[in-house]
Each structure stands twice: as C-alpha cells, then as structure tokens.
Image (cartoon, rainbow, N blue to C red; front, side):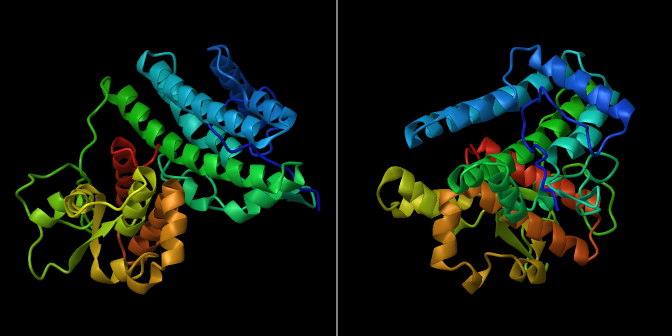
Length: 339
C-alpha cells in the first residue's frame, strides 16, 4: 500500500499533482484558480512546508505555525474579497466549494491504484454542506507522519487543518450568499422543525424551536415548559470556563462565570439528542474538559459532528442541521472562542 498525502488546508498549492479527485478539465481549472490566489502574493502550502522542514528547534516551529495560521486567514479573507469584488463568479465559487474543496480537503490512501475514502467525503447538498465532519484526524496524522513530519508537527498540522476547514465552510457560505444577493447578509439565528424548509429568523419573542442557535441566555428566555427541548452549549461550558481560567491564570469570579455561561453559544435540541452528545453529564470527564480547554476548535468540531449525526438520526432535515452547524461555528468565531 502506497500512502499519499492530499493537502487539507486553506492555502493554495503550486503543485496539485495529478488531481486524484478531479477530471483533467477540472484539474486544469483548479490549477488556474490556485494560481490566481497565489498571484495575490499569498504563500503556498509548499512555502510553509519548506519553512517547517528547515526548522531546527521548537521556537522556529512555533513561529512557522503562527505564520501558517496568518497565511490561512489571509487566503480565506482574499477569497471573500475576490467574490465580493466580482473576481470570482458564482460558478467558480461552487467549484471551490465542491470540487476543489474535495481535492484539497480529503484524506485518503492509494490501494490498488484507487484512492480509499468515505463516499461522503465531498461537500453535501449540492456543494453547500460541511466537510469537516468527515475529517479523520487519526488517519490524517498517520499520513503526515508517513510523509516525513514529526509526530508533534503532524499533530499541530492536523489541528490547523481542522480549524481551516471550519473557516472555509463558514467563508464559503458567506461569500456564496453575497455573490447571489449582491450583499453580505448579516448572520441570523437558525430556526426549523423536522419538516420545515423555512430557515428565516423568527421574532425573538416567539417560543424557541429545535435548531435555533444563539446565546444560552437568549434561547432560555424563549423556552416554554414542556417543549421537550434543551439548550446545548457548544463547546461545553466546562471547557470554556477552564480555557478562560487558563488564559487569565486564575479562577473566574462568580459574576464572570455567570456572564460566560449566559453568553456562550448554544443550540436548541431535543432532550434525548442532548443526552447523546459527547459532553452530556458524566461523559464530560475532567480529562476531557482539560483537553477541550486546550483545543476549543477541536471540541467544536467533535461536538458539531455529534450534533449533525444525532439530529439527522432523529429525522431532522440534513440541510437545516448543517445550517445550524454553520451558525454554531460562526458565532463561536464572532465571540472569539475559535481564533
């Protein structure tokens, strides 16, 4: 078995290789789009890998990872601006979201001249759904180690890739809507029922509904006794609190704890779905809390994966579930939970 690495990041590539997931025509288009991004003066993934390979100590590696994150953010922001300025067409946006996203964001291996991967590894719902839920972190880290990265660098690379996948999903949704409407719409709460296709925000005085996304305080203010719904913090409040205390170097005060709890991102879900979440009750062990506090982005990824699975299993529309996931990610970005 020959292991191959397929880049999974927000950076353009100077060498897409044989474009294993694309047709020859699409491969040419992918290379052309990648070059347009590089022409903006943005670094390539090869640039970052070269710098990392030249490092001789941890201080250097830390600096490269900081530069990598800055380059990823700059690339995503450049894509947004290119779309808003009309430099990227609606068709090109769809291509980036689906075909190029599949090429750059799928991990797999070659076996008998075929690339093994989940059949669900492409973007869902006609190019509008998330991909991070199908990112196998364990397999990806092994691939990177086999490609020559140290175990520590491979683990850091996977962490950055998870973060970039989430940012790319959110950015693509934003720029896709902007290209369609000629304006950048303000993010709003997601509201839906199992059979509803109405994804418009409803009046805040109306009762809360499944898949609404907002602050815990706002959702609770619209809750009704007996509605069978609960407000699920994503990431868990315990992880948020621990992360904040680690940042400050001291325990939170009572008032600080209350404010953090009330303003944290939550999604409205049925009680049984809440119980099935990875952080419900005794499942959120001190060890897990500590781990999540050190990697809130990874915690959001895991928890939204579980949310998607649990809600779809309960009959909720996959598209509306994915919309809610995007809102959870975007709100966590806006509140600074995901840097």
